[in-house]
Image 1 (cartoon, rainbow, N blue to C red):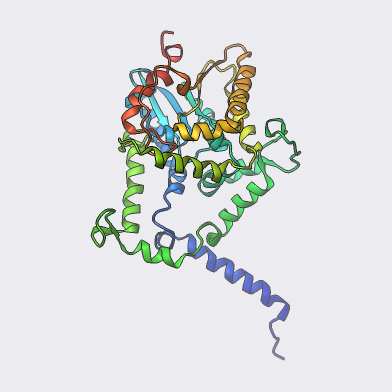
Image 2: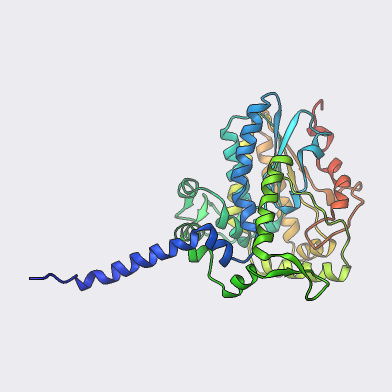
Length: 379
């Protein structure tokens, strides 16, 4: 007698087939055609693994050279090893900055680097309220951390407190971990299917001010070239990406952009206990090591600075950062310096491209403030 396939197993078989079909959307050729070419942020995160390999290779080739470590957002992405040679001779500076790189992302790479036992000349840590916002982790959940790191640092029983600085966090929240695992397991969760993106990826890019005139390359070809550029700067600039935008935007644009940025990330929201926890963890990892650590408040446009200061957010944030740095500084052989260029009279070049990003022309003015003599060799 012929046996029929148990009906009860049909849903399981269907679920398994759908799971297998979903995996096809992880294939690079599929991602390139279905995921918008304009969304490049994830690659900055993913390619830090490539930068890490470059760092290990350089350390093996030049064992006498020390390592400088730059952690932060795109606002620190300009700082390259050659630029910093004046301040730190015989040092290769590796730039692990990424778009909206939050403290959890910074801590992950700091710990990876510390595990190598390489000699660190200095560590730069960028901090501001935006990087501590609840939404700042979105990019890094897409393209950073390894499975073991997230598993080891899930905060299953997080207590709630009105003040996020008083929350006894112990890692990623359950919600954040859930998003991470869903993006690891399901391609269509990580790369949502968008028919308009498929069309745009395979269409030639139009040149901004000339309607109908194209650049001669499709969106996906442009993205492919940009990814190659990131890989190149990992080897030539050790992760730093030159800021080629050297103009100042109009005040009216900066005001609108500042309001939009504040409303998107900070309005009506408390800071993230996850990011506060990982910031404190970085300080604890570095206390007593003798490594000079620069905790850096990045400059922002005046409209954004005023907007963050309006409800007391900025003063509270800066005070808490200085308080935490003060606590770890009490440990012998700890070398922490807090730098806020916006309070320094030597900061003269204040041209901004948008509310967050300083014009590339202003970085030479910023560097002596950011790397004071107290952290340089011989002082």
